[in-house]
Length: 300
Picture 1 (cartoon, one colour):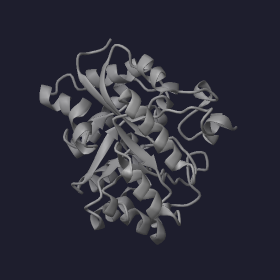
Picture 2 (picture 1 turned 90 degrees about the vertical axis):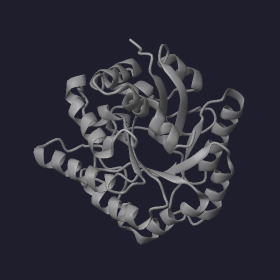
Picture 3 (picture 1 turned 45 degrees about the vertical axis):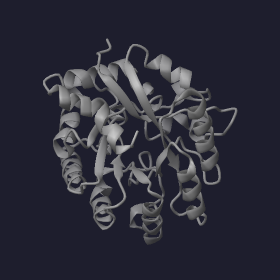
Picture 4 (picture 1 turned 180 degrees about the vertical axis):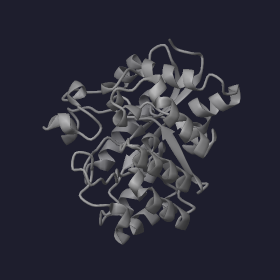
């Protein structure tokens, strides 16, 4: 059941397969995606009206679209499609564009992205894991000086960076953040606590604190089904509360990661859980978690 809370959903994906190709949605082996079995959402469009149907009954005032996996050379086209949609429909209110920070034409791409009115930042997934079924990359890009040099270019364009990484990379990311305090960083999906044994969870908790020590770093509490496939409100409660404790309600925000996260549960299920977990928070704290923090961080 929807509450009356105002929601700004800071992590939404849309795609039109007639307009662009998305290999992770259209090629095998879909069941082995590190985020889960993508078969339920594969090979079909997910457009704004689909998202609005999935969120019916909830007061979603604004959304931020996050790049959906377009390759180098196709990332600006995705941004232009989204900007045209925003010009026509009002959604998305913010755009986190795709960029490969090793792209030799990175400066031109960032300049073009930044020229689009709704673009606020960029994302390149950097999740590296020694388990081949969990890794998104063939090496840890955060350790590549050339990648870090590309990251540094975001500042001159006034762009933030959406940081999707694993806990084993958090210390490196925190050190990069400390050297670049002028680039806002938004950790995706609660920092993906994928190794669920005691040592893995302790590494995640410690990594959150290292990142949170940098004042320009914030976190999205989203993607919880990625690392907890049989999740319940009680099983995700410690993860939610740990993120809030580390970052505070001014730098933590709930987000849906729809439709990717729909393979693990409905929008209603996730947001009802967020509502219940924060039931004892003050009205101001809840407003920040569900809307205000995202509005401020993404300048909506």
